[in-house]
Length: 345
Image (cartoon, rainbow, N blue to C red; front, side, top):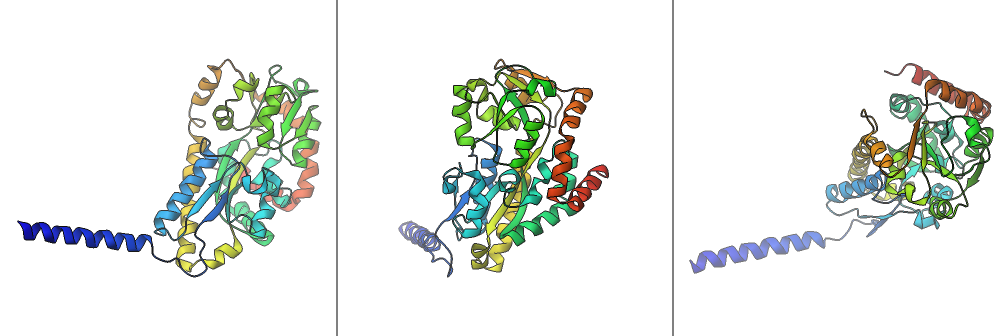
């Protein structure tokens, strides 16, 4: 009995020592002990959950060779979302899941997704991100200085305010609407008669609470997770005027420092995390009844769903903006997107 116990104890110690040796194994040459991932939103949101999933998959599949720490709130660029892409190129940020909207000031082609009322449904969005247009955009991002690996999603952006229901462009007249730092958003809301005000998301909630701005536009998942009903947002209109895809990217120097095997792992982990994040972002939104809307309505928020005729009025009011930006984005790229959407299944 004693010999058996002694053998068992020695075997257990050997296994523990082996595990400790693996845990303390030196990193490959050129690897960092920790890599910084930039995000606008944290784990309370689908966006942040996508970051957590990617980091977890990479850590597990590389057996700890690549460890990623999340920095939500674009903390690595002091909360300035429009500086994120430049920081990725410069190496301040190692990895990111970024918004096409926030990166559009540096990459004009990404304004494609913000053309007002281009994308009527999720099938239209998928036709772009999963088709030739998506491949073209990845090539543009690559040339701009970062390596894109996969698509994610923040969602269709709906509009809310503290004053009254929005059913027509006239209802937006004079409303102070918080928008992201994109000239296209300024043009769109100005065309609708609103008073658009650019500010970061970190500044937006205090501004809504104080009444410095009347409204904002964001996906429903953000409306609920950020509890915007508590900062005066009592009127919500579903108009789906633009979508906001996310892009999983890596700094090119960081990418080159990894072995080909680890590069393949990180790429596949991004693809897998992106698919899971999109599913999380869309959960409840593509189902009949919109469960999120029931939750929002329970907080005393009036939810308005535009009729087809009401939506047409917004489309007509923003068409000059669409035409202006089609030329700036690139008529050929926008034309390819329009054809892909028309042919969607």
